[in-house]
Amino acid sequence: MSLEITRTERDDTVTLTVKGEIDMSTAGEFRRALDDSKAPGRLVLDLTGVEYLDSAGVKVLYDHLGQHPEVVVSSGTVILRILAITGLLDQLTIRES
Image 1 (cartoon, rainbow, N blue to C red):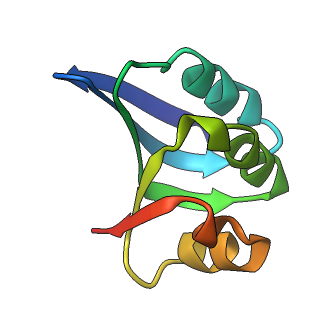
Image 2 (cartoon, rainbow, N blue to C red):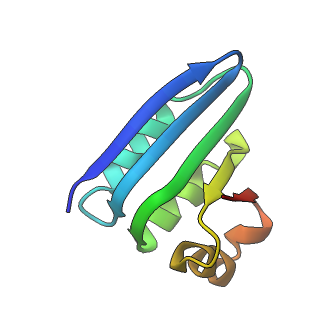
């Protein structure tokens, strides 16, 4: 499955809306989008459309902790469980949609 990343900017907030699967084959695209999203204000990662997140995607999130992204996820999804298991849940600002 492919990955679709949409970037929007409003005031000093950059939002990356991600849909699809973040795995070994799409982690590079996800990383580039995060690398290019540096903004003076807030970074929001909307992962409500992410159906799968493997260790390659977790590594990309971990590498970008310095950007202090706010992560939006759907309640009760496997993504929340993955973030909890990996310890990222406590290191990211999480907002459930």
